[in-house]
Length: 437
Ligand SMILES: Cc1ncc(COP(=O)(O)O)c(C=O)c1O
Image (cartoon, rainbow, N blue to C red; front, side, top):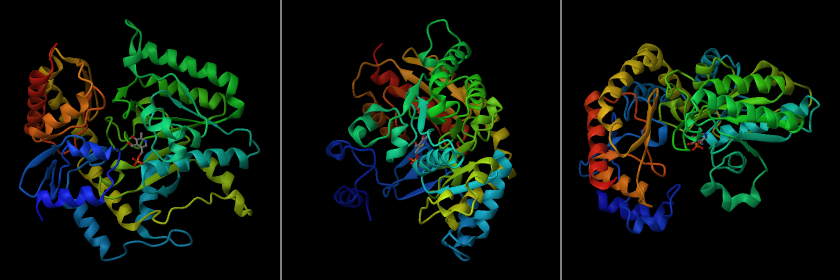
């Protein structure tokens, strides 16, 4: 196998995600033969630093020896078994550990993030139906939110490019103002702005709470909106409002869970417990597709009945896959054994110091950081900024995928200061070369 051969065959047979395939007439597809730590390597030995953790999933590097070993052992025991009517050790252990970590005692499994969103929305709606409130059918989400691409998830997503084409197929949902501090008025602090957005949420709930089932929110960071960060007070106030108006709060921690924002779960920063938490991406350390929705005893009890129809009859064939659960357990072991949350705090402080020259670059706007996420906007009038930047980064052995003019780093937690230095220097070079201010 060589690069050229794989590219030709891929373009002939694979329909790549989130891609206008014609763009590959001029945009090279990147063949990857293997992964090693933070690096992706092609058949000719070219290396790319995976500064986006392969779509925000990888936590402890590619080919991590500890996750590999856990998976190899699991392979020799049980690869998969139907989870309806049957159970197995990895899924039980994982559910117990996630319950202890989230305070939500019942775990329902899906495969990708979008399937977790679907599960949470359906469960919330069904809960209200089972408890005599069938009129509660509406969902609200934040402006510029992203919750996945399946029809239910897309209904609560607010990204026009992904959503508008499918509008006739989608459920109505309402978007309330986003507390993303980039949207604040000049002179307004992130906290004041977050409080103003919470007031807007309350205004909406006063009128519509009776027909609203749930508010779904990406806690602390709206990742697909270009790493829009916001003040934790918004979540604290949203929790209070959801309690007061009897609305479920669904925390979509698919992108931000598992240490990304500096705490194991982002909700911890606001001291709140959601009614549902959606987890995926980093849950398996970036190894295998797995998602989980955890919820309260109260929600669980509303489905527990002699009537089959009052149960949650949702299913996916690979629900609770044993290999994926084992990868998730190995990932949780690494968090515990290596005290990853504290280690990341030190790592991030070191990286922040390395990023000072970048932060001070004249083309850089809104430089921001939370946990293991860094982002900034670039003052550029290039309509193809994201594509040009991506290509320039590849030439410097960096995998970076700007969102519009937002450049962000979401690296695996194993990145060394040298690698981070290489990233910072590479990005400054690109800015110096391509951006005229
Ligand atoms: C916050 C959030 N929710 C849901 C999803 C959808 O996850 P998946 O792509 O695994 O379906 C994503 C993916 O980026 C996400 O960032």
